[in-house]
Length: 347
Image (cartoon, rainbow, N blue to C red; front, side, top):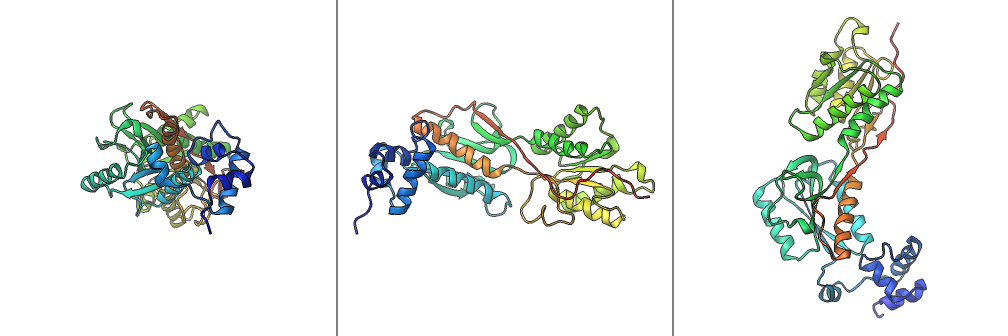
C-alpha cells in the first residue's frame, strides 16, 4: 500500500494542498479557520498521513523538533503536566518535543544543550519545575529560547512564561474572606524563594483590599514540608482560648496544609467546622485525597508548557527572533473543595 500523501489528505478534507501544508508547517493560525484545521487533521489521522520530516527539513532548514530542557523531570510531581502541555501544543503545530533533563547538574546541562544544538532543533524551552531565578546557559540563544516557570537573573534577556504567584496568593485569602473569615493566618514558604515571597505579597494584597490587617503572630514563614506545616500550625492554634486563634489559614503549599490538618486533629480542632484551610499547588494525589478534601490554588503547569511552546513556534513560523522582553503571566485558578466553610465556633 502506498504511503498517503498531502494530496490524499487534501482530497479527503475537501481543501487545497496549500491548506494541508499550512497545518503541518505550523502556519495555520490566521490562515485557516479552526474548523478547517480540525477537518484536515481528522483526514490525516484517518489516512495515517505523516509529513515527510526529512524532506521538509531539507527544504525549510527546520527540523520540526523543539527541545525541552528541564531541571527535574523525573522527581517533580508537576513535570508531567508541563511536559504534556508542551507536547500537545507542539503536535498541534506539526512539531515534536525532544525532552532532556539536567538534574540541576551544570555538566549534564551543558551536555544537554550541546545535544539539542547538534540536533538542530527549531528552538528550546528551558523549564524549571519550581519557580526560580536562574542563570540561563550562555549557549542558549535568546532569539530561539523561551523560559517556562523561571526567569533569567538578567532582566529582559530571555522571554518567559510564569504563573501569577502573587495573584494566586491573593485568591487564596479571598476564598476565606468570601466565606466570611476575618481572622486569617498565613503559613508561608521559605523567605528566599520567589514563589513564597510573591504568594505572601498576594496574601497581604487580599487582606488590605478587604480592610483587614495581617497579625504578625499569625504570619509565619515555615517552609514547604508537612512537618513544618504541623509545627507552624501548633504555634497559631495551640491556645486554650478558641477566640484567640485564627478561623482560617492560608498555606504555602498542599504539604504544609496537610501538616495543618494533622495539627488541628491533634488539638481536637475540626476542619472545616472550627478551622478552614487553603493550600497551594493542587498537587496530584494529595489535595483531593485529604480529609476533608483541600481547597487549593492550582499552578498552571500544563498551560505554562503549552504557552512556552506556542510563543517559541510563533517566532519560528514568522521566521523572526523571539522577543526577549516578552513576558506571559498565567492565572492560578482556585480549586474549591471541602476544607473551607463559613467561620463557626464550638459551643
